[in-house]
Amino acid sequence: MSELSQHHQIEHDVAPGDEEEHRVGARVLGYVAGLGLALLLTATSFFIAGTDLVWQPSIPVALIVLAIAQMGVHLVFFLHITTGPDNTNNVLALAFGLLIVFLVVGGSVWIMSHLNANMPPMDQIMPMRG
Image (cartoon, rainbow, N blue to C red; front, top):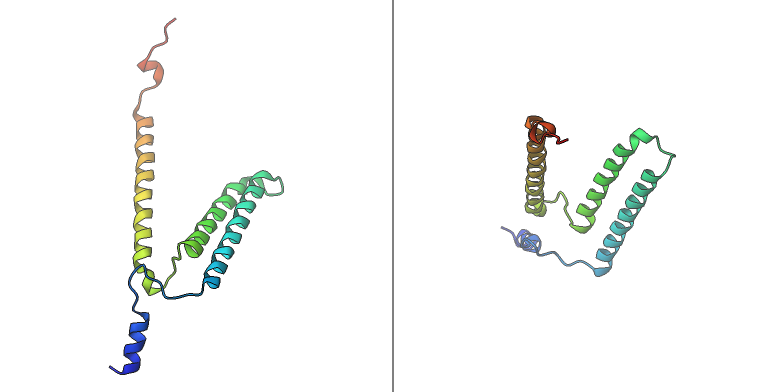
């Protein structure tokens, strides 16, 4: 291999968790931009939930969209999850965590719905005394 390609490989060969050197100002600017977007999305959510200017049946959909946008802002600006090749482990860990959360929540809802459907009414379990 040529000396140039070896130097290029060594320069970008970074261990997981280690970051290349960045200026502090650029990092702070990224965090401030993320904070601004997060505050804007939060304020918009409160505005939509408390106003009559928005069509009432669309409020839950709008809040879900804003919540997903909020998660995206947090993932990109604060957790630094990007599509780069060095973030593969982070993305896989995030996907596995989401899978576990959906399994636990979905399984709990499934169990509770089956319990609700298969339980006899309360007046059959405990007859009214009178």
